[in-house]
Image (cartoon, rainbow, N blue to C red):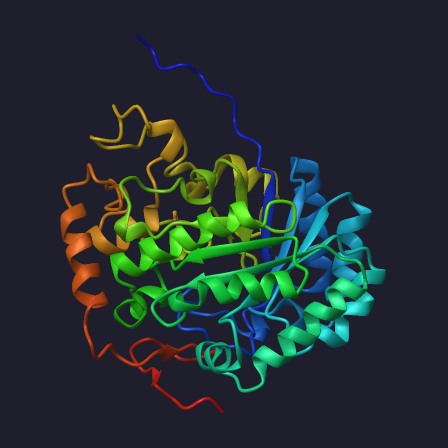
Amino acid sequence: MNAPIRPMPIPIGLLAELTHRCPLRCPYCSNPMALDRRSSELETEDWKRVFGEAAALGVLHVHLSGGEPTARADIAELTAHCAKVGLYTNLITSGVGQASARLPALFDAGLDHVQLSVQGAGQATGDLIGGLAGAHAAKLAFAAEVVRLGLPLTVNAVIHRGNIHEVEAIIALAVAMQAKRLEIAHTQYYGWAYANRAALMPTRAEADASVAVVEAARERLKGTLVIDLVLPDYYGLYPKPCSGGWARRSLNVTPSGKVLPCHAAESIPGLEFWSVREHDLAEIWRSSPAFTAFRGTDWMPEPCHSCERRERDWGGCRCQAMALVGDAAATDPACSKSPHHARMVALATAESVDPNPPPYIYRRIGGTAAEPRQGEPVA
Ligand code: FES
């Protein structure tokens, strides 16, 4: 029997990585290993064209992200343009650097929503993990201003060994900040986080306890706070449908204009990424080699191809398969059906119980994992 013909999916979200510049230096940074420099960033008019093309393609919401997106002086102008072409805007920010200073102009420009990252529940953890003294205090002030302006606030906390004992306190912090939503996201280990995995991996018992804390809080805080939970991959049974499935729901545009199916796709060697400098976004979505490489189910190996979950998991995470198996087309080792799953769990278990984890490899533009600034004191 022939496979059913499926219509081309339409993306609903665009992650606009406006810049890789960032005052924070988080060891789990989701930006690529090689960061784009300011001199290679798209100009204001390029981004405006991209947002117009995104709206025409059917995209509904734009995540204005980075790095720290408020490092760009034109952030309010770009936000106003998104509003003009009918896109819902979500500012994904660290709340430090220029964030507070630029917030009033962003509000005036029609910004719809703010997602603020926190690195811990208090100053000690927050400043240490973000690698910046004073960062946590700046976030508190920023959140208060967001709420005062009447903008909806989501708090995002990436969870790992260094802050997993604070999940209950992070939930309390989100309530105190008057956030409407909290995202408790266990670290995804590819790119920079993969280089720091041994420093970041929690034990299974810690991961399980954190999930129980979230579930109890969800009940307790019904009507006050919605909590989204991204489960820890290494201790799971099935993989997550990464990005909602490869080239199915969203696209990422890097600061220099490359269009990626997911934020870590550049970690897969041999993929060809097209740029908005040369192609229309719709053409890239439909036809660029990186988007067609793992779209749908035809590319899947066994056991994925005949698995009843194949259109639920969409094969899991290609970047994780690349990092752990050395083959982006392999079954995600987070799946218990993968022949590599046991090795993945053993790796995580061994790293998580090491009483002397390595120091963080902090992030900075121009730095590499091979030449890290290891364990620097918070400046
Ligand atoms: Fe690239 Fe998961 S991060 S597919």
